[in-house]
Length: 76
Image 1 (cartoon, rainbow, N blue to C red):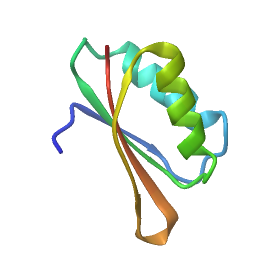
Image 2 (image 1 turned 90 degrees about the horizontal axis):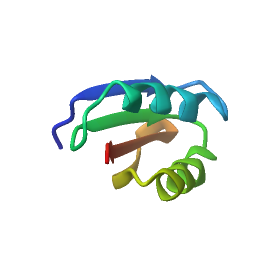
Image 3 (image 1 turned 90 degrees about the vertical axis):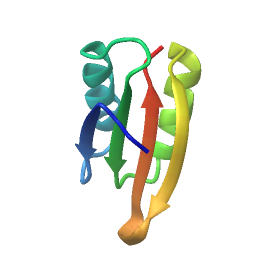
Image 4 (image 1 turned 135 degrees about the horizontal axis):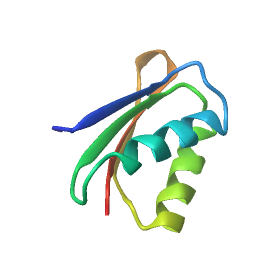
């Protein structure tokens, strides 16, 4: 999937992945997509809750090898 910005939050624990995502989204325009890489297993529920509460759209989430979680979030 194509994306406009990438946030590498690997090795960071909550709430840092969310804070990094929030900062990236503030710099994007509506419709643009940010890809986030995270290793914190709690990030799966955190990103689901964050997008539900903020109105941004979680387009896809997937667990990659080595316990890396990949998220694609669209700015709304």
